[in-house]
Length: 107
Length: 122
Image 1 (cartoon, one colour):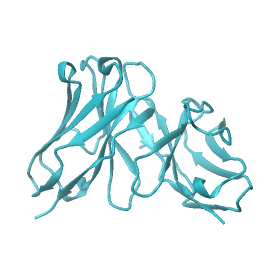
Image 2: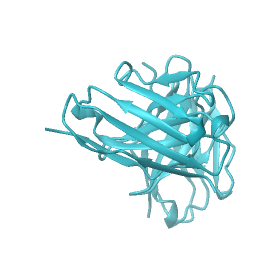
Image 3: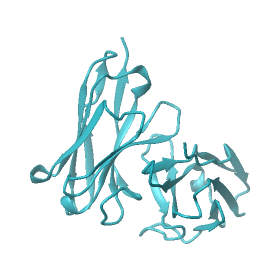
């Protein structure tokens, strides 16, 4: 079955740049998106179609894809960015797939 | 303002049934694919099911295929998930989620409800 692989955790110092990766065999064929989830809250879409930010999402969030790896980059990371981030892709045999999630810790 | 409000969750015994509802407002309901996504306690997100704007096309995760049925009532702007033959592993918070783009299948989800807890236990 198709899977998306994320690192369980990433740490970054406040003000620095955080990068979270998402690997999957067919990511190069389909756009990925990213969600932010804080405790007790539903997920929030922060990037879709590789690098499109929904209205209200700060410019410090950006996305990219190279080969079979999608990357979420948070520039100038702030304490409020501490959360779990999930990548998600769409496919043919499995319509929607989520990665396992990455806990971003801001030091 | 887009609003999605889930209801119908609760405690059910293994093998039992439950019907979730999601009342939608603030957008043209029949233009967008609607979805159910669940999250087991302390775990990640799992997409469960999606339905096209007209209701003519439905999509399911393998883990629920044959047990769950998604539907929508366009006249009432409401999404449903009928869950039968429930198992302990179906215990999760269930979210209703709206698709971002107008299309015939699920892609990305720009608005989510607050979620409703379903507990399957004897």
